[in-house]
Every structure is written in C-alpha cells, then in structure tokens.
Image 1 (cartoon, one colour):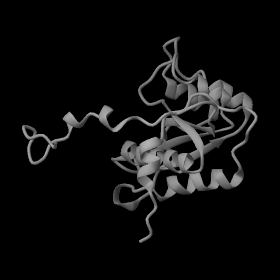
Image 2: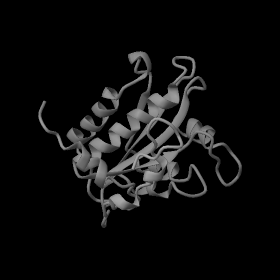
Image 3: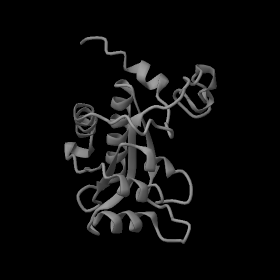
Length: 183
C-alpha cells in the first residue's frame, strides 16, 4: 500500500465557518467529496445514508437559519450536503451518516477545501420549531427519513491552525481498563 499521509489531513483539519463567497467548489471536487461519503464504512455494508446536494443561494441562506446559533456559515458556502438516513433501513443510521460525514470532511480538507458540520437531529430553531422539521419543510424531505446534519463546503477564508498534539485529551485514553492510562 502506498503511504497516503492521511494523518496530515486528520492533524490539520478544522471546522471552517468563514469562506470565500466567490470561489466555487468544482464539479470534480464535489464528486470526490460525495465519493468519500459513499465509500465510508456502514453497518453490514448496507450504505443507507442519502446525500442531498444544495447549491441554490436562497436555499443555502435559509439553511443558515436552521438553528439559533452555529449555522449561519451555511449562507456563505458555495455548496452544502444534507445527510439523510432512515431508522427503518438500519438501526445504526446515525453512526453510518456520521462516518460518511467524517470521510467527506477529510476528503474536502485534503483538496484544500474547508467544511463544517451543522447538527440538525435533536436541535431547535429560536421559535422552538425542531430544526429537522424546518429542513424537512424547506427541502420537501419525506417523514421516513431523518435529517442528520448539513455539511457546508467551500474555500477557506483565513487561517486554520493545527491543534498542537499536547492539547489533545490524552487523559481520556486508557489501556486494558479505565483505571490504566494510555500514557
């Protein structure tokens, strides 16, 4: 196997909330991001996660209001992907979608693009409306599908410094039992 240096993407990837509005994500970049999501591991290799690509500026702006805080960045991204899943299709629907999202974010970062996860499941808008119902209404998503998250993708505007290794929570790593530290 060739040395892919995936750890470099893992070490440096950050959640990006400020994007260059005028730089598009190319069709080739988008295809690789989606491919990464489709290649992510899934429970029993069933691959039940669905991906809804959103590029319409008005819809991206509306998605930026899916929660009171933390989602405004969606109004400025050139493309977002809504991850959907069905509890009826797979008991591990949330884990499968989360794995797909992580793969997509690492692929984007590897290509020099930023991304950020906007949690939908279990969140609410300022008026109390569940975020999931808001997104479902905006995008005409059927009730049998759960809206897991919305991922925004675009060109990074600013710095995204690597998190130093000594800032990692090594105290949360154990070996053999919870009373034994890893380090």
